[in-house]
Length: 179
Length: 185
Figure 1 (cartoon, each protein chain N blue to C red):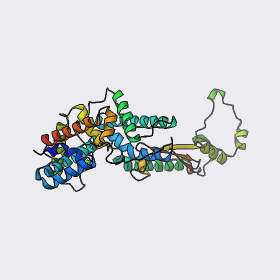
Figure 2: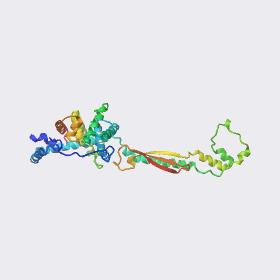
Figure 3: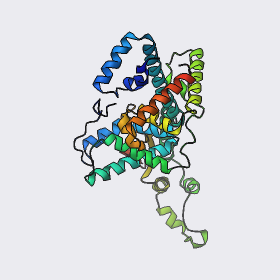
Figure 4: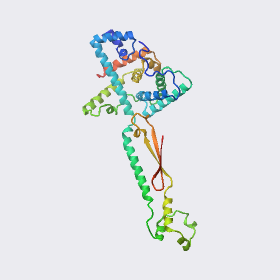
């Protein structure tokens, strides 16, 4: 398995604190980071706070001439650790009953389509509960666009382990819910 | 079961080396079962994405749907306030001096400390000017109103980060007209 079979989506050779590149990075990663944190179990407000703190940390990191390699993975790692520090809310909400799934259906969706989509997502939510914590986190980071190597850096595990976990998790979900 | 099946997820995720990816691709083109698995894994990935979006939508306050309503209500409230202020600054009608003085609320010290004016002193004052002055004194000279306006009400969706609000400072003149409008974040 290769570590760098596809180049990173954000080639950032040199970043300066407060530069236009950091602003572009904020615009690109703000929503994926929020989604990752909310799916981890943080509330919307907590996730907003963590994203702000992560970008403040990035500013300090760049101002102190820190490592500029793989900034995206660095940001996800910082956000992940900040979220882990909020253990009171972490772990408790991912997979709760959904109320917002209608937002993802077309405006002209029929009531039958709405019901079917809701049932599908609720089956999926039940299947996600059967995954281990590490498998869920791997899938979440993968859904955030991270490569296996970056996921390994965020979670502190080997790239090959990430590959195994992602494969196992996808197969479990495929078996449990007939999507 | 094909040996290649263990690499299918990594192949879908483009995580294999070029040599491995080439071998898996050639196999998938020929193997119906592996093609079926690849389609299943892609559907699972898409459903996981949709699920994450649904979780985020379910936990995010649905402020956007109320923005037009809130903005409309704020505008209506402002218009009503301005109309009210303007109505209170109507110049006094031509009325008798005594009635005008009696009806005008005269702010002042307690009755005990009020100086006793002789009738001649009262007559020297121009009643119409006095009433106009009192009416003007009732109004704050530089009343100001702050209106919070969410960024979504001004800019198209996605143009500003979530949670950004602006505050419009309106300075209202004595005649009820808007003297100054200043937008700040």
